[in-house]
Amino acid sequence: MIKTTGESNWRRSKRCSSGACVEVARNGEWFLMRDSKNPADTPLNFDRAAWEAFLTGVKADEFSNA
Image (cartoon, rainbow, N blue to C red; front, side):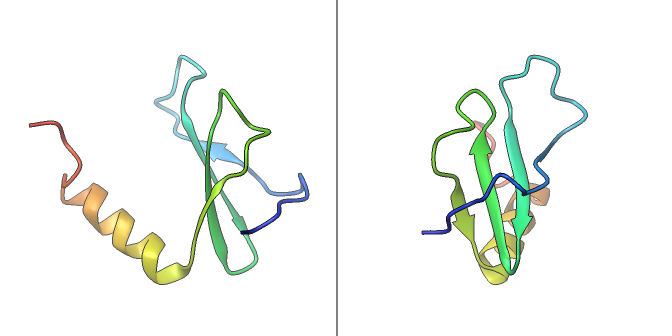
């Protein structure tokens, strides 16, 4: 588990208007993801290969509810 220090630069999509969004940050070699409604919870963490696989899936629309 990656422990964040609060120094991570958390970002969310510009399309997020409700404040209930996923946020991402980088902490060294790790990519972190958290729920913006619960920022104190431990974020999910991914190495570069897993993060790139996730992004590839998002771009290919593999996660749609179709």
